[in-house]
Image (cartoon, rainbow, N blue to C red; front, side):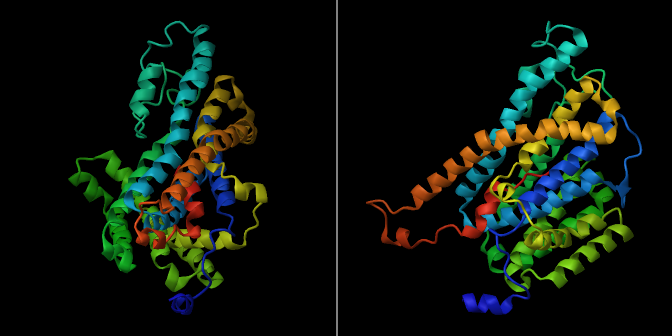
Length: 388
């Protein structure tokens, strides 16, 4: 069977242990930080390409990578284990981030604006209400006790967190289709689903009208094609492999689509974006320390808050470069702490439990000892970055 797979490969098999996806995700997270520097500093005329900002294209890259790696995780895990892994990867750091918004960032902003903390705990949106309302990943409130105040972009401490809910909805989509054998046996059902999501985006005005202008549907259909594009690349992996010619052609095809059809070309190029990114990761050098430590999630979830905190103290007057660099200096150490103290320990605990559960116990069926272990190709999927 392995020889058959080798014959089918146009290029070489994607090696999950020798790539620079951690570095690429970190660059994408920092690109989102730079993108936010325009609105958070009150600077107009942010550069765009094909009608989309730098941050928007970074989000597309995130979702394409996630689509590939998350589908790989689902295809090799049962539904329960898959959901546990996804929750363990995204939720603990998210909850800690929400708590720090209420315990550190917002009190400082409130103090600077009012000169004291009187009423902080009871002013709408109260810190407790912020925590409870947003704990389910969907951001209901962005302000805390009315802060931040006196900044170019008031009333939002962490605007980046909005995309995590839609990322998790994508996880659920893959969880559900993984139940049906037809999606595992052939690459075509996932491909058709990807095409359907693109068609929905092309006709987004009609879809919005039929769903009474449901903004959740609009946002999901904006991001889902990128995720399903990555999933499509995964299900075709044994046929197309990774080859430099296909990588270059994918990038060129994506550029043509987004240039010619800016309203939906990005979504239509979802599979090309994912393939091109994976190809780049096979030859782009990556520092060893970044390969072992995925801090991109932490950068993503804390950058906006640090930018707002800097703006509270007037740093938005430093210009885009100075403002972005200052935010990076504050964000990266926090992201490293999040990885070392929260994200990595939680994932190690989950993997340790998987390993222990896989061992045949004294009452285990002999067949249990023959059950296939999770593929080592899925290791990066457990540290995948949730979107922007």
